[in-house]
Length: 351
Ligand code: MRU
Image 1 (cartoon, helix red, strand yellow):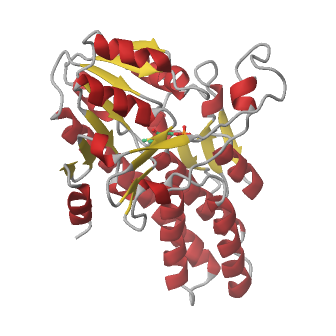
Image 2 (cartoon, protein in one colour):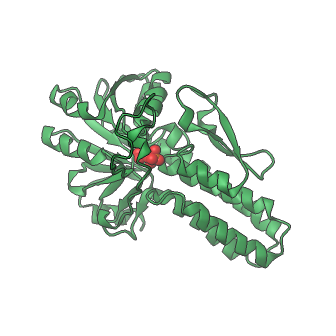
């Protein structure tokens, strides 16, 4: 594991930059990047150098704080205008994970409330707020892990899709949190990690994190999940989420909804784990969630020595799908396990 997994996104020591572990190079290379320019920050999020809904939010918070610090000598009006523009720019890097706009809006509201303060003071406050988001995420992951652990028992087989571990968050992760916490407590799980085409977060990141943590992990291709379930190897499915609508429909990495449909067929409970910052009550249903469409080359040629499809063949590459709430056995947040009907149980979280 990288020396400090919980530190894979942080503010640079100079306070004007953000340091991230480049997740696109894992598992082969552990390399940290220093982001200074808005374009570098945008690109790091867009290209998944930093990825996973909570980690994107944490990173965006630090990015805006660093950009504010760089501009602290500007006149107040110009400082505020630039901050507003930069926040909108960072927010446009990826559309689906709500944590990005959630974190940027949180910093934006703070800056707005300090309209009369000197830019240097606003920059310092934004820095503290970004650090608070990071710290809260650590606590949320821990609480999600505790609640998730009540849903499984020693020796269980768990299937997961994509990566919702420490690299996608701050520490422990969401879907992987109960597995890592349980392992720390001496429990044993057999985890099946879908490789997660086309960007292979399951193979490159989940298998890497679980293996390094001493968890029994078996990597499978996405189309093998059905057989693993049929063989009786899977007691529960744990996945993360990028945006949960008010009715419980949950957007997560492309392929997640297929896992949920399979789980229903085989009578296996399917759980979505994520912090309340990923719940978007302003989104009535999954139909209102914008799904990111990505570069066809991720399907045609990326990760292959040679292209594995005819050059220019038409591709459709949605990065996420929405799992219908009727397929979800429970949504695990830091406040506990929400059960259907989700319109009520999710709304209650915010009262
Ligand atoms: O495109 P990615 O790698 O950012 O997608 C990540 C996922 O879909 C995760 O499951 C989700 O963000 C939850 S991370 C705790």
